[in-house]
Length: 114
Image (cartoon, rainbow, N blue to C red; front, top):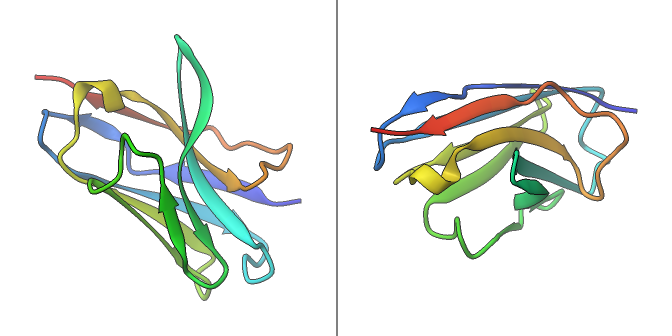
């Protein structure tokens, strides 16, 4: 079972950028898909971006062109570069395997507000 620690969130103005990081205990080499999820009090946790073990990426339409997911198998880390942030991107962001493992990190809060 993996242990996940997210970081990099914060308060940013609309149009700004943040880079989220996820440190994964244990090797991610053999994990097929890693993803970033987000959750708000109004919505269930949802996947926003995914990256395969071969480096193929996929995105939900509402972040496509603004977010970029990447993974570093040497450092066992997964990243989410978020550009042109919008107020509706405000959420707690988590990383996890896809499908999600039963173990979630604490998440990192992203707040987009002027």
